[in-house]
Image (tube, rainbow, N blue to C red; front, side, top):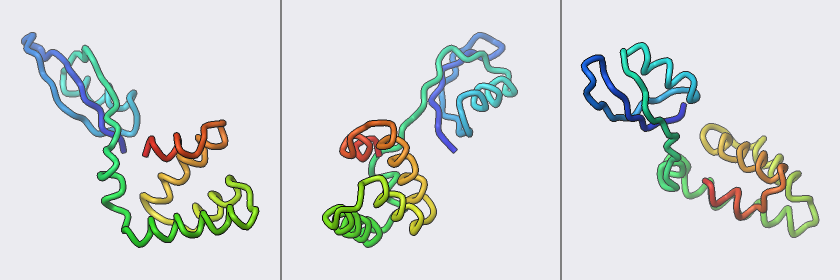
Length: 117
């Protein structure tokens, strides 16, 4: 689930601002419409670095970093190393790794993919 910040008007014409949690923007708009709100603006709230990694232990991050460095130094291609580590991960960390892999496969440098998370 993602969080979206919105600005809307209610039936009386008063401004209403807040945050709604939904799968995507389309679902967020539908949820707000059910609340009889006319949406003026909606933006995706990206989680802060510490919010994403607050659910991931420091040990998990350290292990990931060490294993990635070992695999890359051994000559394994970056994408293959990331895929192996993603398969070994679970929960929120796995989801973050999937997004990083998608970005790197799309041509983004590793540092940019990591920076987004």
